[in-house]
Amino acid sequence: MELVLNTFGTSLNRENEGFVVSKDGERQRIPAEGITSILISRGAQITSDAVLLAIEKEIEVIFTSRDGEPMGRIWSPKYGSISSIRKGQINFSFSHDAVSWIKEVIRKKIENQQALIMLFSPGSDDLKKLVDKSVNRLEDYRKKIDNLDGDIISDVASQLRGWEGLSSKIYFETLNRFIPESLRFDQRTQHPALDPVNALLNYGYGLLYTKVEGALIKAGIDPYIGILHRDNYNRPVLVYDVIELYRIWIEFVVFTLAAQNAITDEYYSVKEDGSYWLEPLGRRVLLQSVNDYLEDIVTTNGLPRSRKTQIDLYAQSLAQKFKKFE
Image 1 (tube, one colour):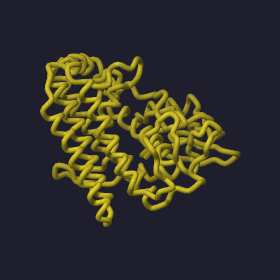
Image 2 (spheres, rainbow, N blue to C red; image 1 turned 90 degrees about the vertical axis):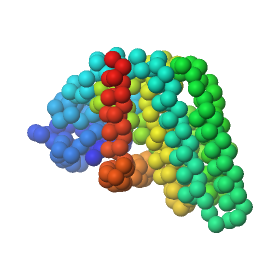
Image 3 (cartoon, rainbow, N blue to C red; image 1 turned 60 degrees about the horizontal axis):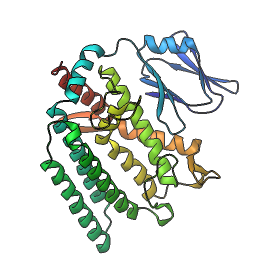
Image 4 (tube, rainbow, N blue to C red; image 1 turned 90 degrees about the horizontal axis):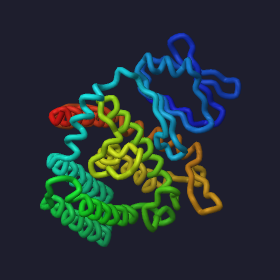
């Protein structure tokens, strides 16, 4: 369970072996058992006693931006064998195996995109033709990636980024046709978002960044040593690589809300510069929807597991892959 403090004036303290959330004179006691992470955004507070309890219970404490992206993190020193795995991680990043790995990540991302636009495909013949065309165009890029090779990442990075960007453009242009016209957008916009759907996507991706980064850290992996994303100074660039496998989950949740016409004016506000920001209601609905979706049990490789657990297990398998290169 995640404990989320995103309301201005909320504070978190320790009481014996549990936490107390306080707001405007009201107090709610929450047992520490069962909490996996604590998310704190601007305007909320946490005491040092609460932080120390979180460390004792191996509960990660994450400070997030308004977009939901992690800005800072406190975690238990018991996590992962970081030093040994990091050596292999660095060696792996300069190997041919890294080329094969990132190709598989982007291929999987495109397959996920194909699957989602086919899932949303409505009954209209014209839209069915659009979906078929888009799926075929995405397949062309997937095959190009299959045929691409190089000794190290730098040999293929520019082509991979280009094809990945073009496939995402096709994907979002197609998904855009399946939501009410009032919610359609011209292009993906990040910071800032220029429409409600992009504001929801950005916040959802931020939530996902937090979970992927946490899974990597717990597995003993350094999130700052990337594979394809390796040029950004002092950023958790490996998170940007791994998250490509799971973006589809956020997109499914957001476009489902949009297709159901569930996004109301109360979800967001529009600033003077035309940017869109989620209000507490929008953040609360999306957070609950994403968490519910990640806690769903799905069968993968014959075993029933939650989607959140799949991220953790993937991080553990990646750590084992890196260790072989130590």
